[in-house]
Image (cartoon, rainbow, N blue to C red):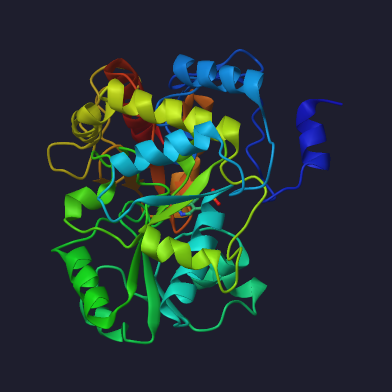
Length: 413
Ligand code: PMP
């Protein structure tokens, strides 16, 4: 039986129609399937592979760590050099108040840990989050998910949670002295790239200060240069009390973290002791890979070129009127054809969304693009929007090829 059929039969499924492409190799911004077909990766493992697939320095760090040790003990008991080195380096690149890193095995677990930390530290119970936000799929993270459709079947969930509208100044009034923490994505990813407007994040920070509420910013998807600065919050002039990290944090290996001031973090170490524990959080191989990827991100100055690459995508995708693509000049098939689809483009760094009138249109475009060697998908809470979240190392030539294909497909479908 083929691997594809075995996959469908024996690997737990999350949808009735998985893509089920068999990828056998990945390098830089490219994926290769079992038939030797090449794809430009516009997803980057959902914002994981910021430094590209299999960066040589990441591979080297992993191999070196394999020769020293793999798992030796649960999180928090032994001094493990990759963990210590990575935590230290991360805090050196964060504001002074974010100086203690608690490593987890996933982004969802980082959300869980941060919610527990906020409750434990504040002695309060209410957790506030936002519509169309995604913080993970475990039951606690699901409880604060901002979309009813995805969580209704799993009730009962955590009590005392409330979802407000992102970017609504009026809704901030609901944050009170009862609120342990507010959790927000600095830039909403699965909502289809929604950016905080008009100093709204600053107003949220001020409201948290006024009510003694901890502000948790989720940069699991938007951190590590994705939006054009190392941390997205730098662009909005706020500093969170707790920062959630994941995805690109591990350089392609599974790793998450919540970061806070040591004074806050230490409350997980007493009353009760072992306030949050795990077996695999901060796995030495994952930390070695993450540390190497973080160094690559900084040393290769990948973030410096994010805005330029974003501008190229936007320019190639948007037409002169800003809502249609420029009429492609380059193929006979599309020559003389007006794009048949109206769409709009949203972007924040190398996180872009092309919005169509419906999921059906979007899905059709995605399927054709994948068949044409452009790997993309849709957003969880914006199923009418096509995802462009490539590795930050994507080259100008790859961007041009991808956009040429996209505009051609838009003309012909
Ligand atoms: N927060 C955000 C913003 C995410 O995008 C994700 C994953 N898509 C998570 C949290 C959860 O991370 P994980 O899938 O590693 O549990």
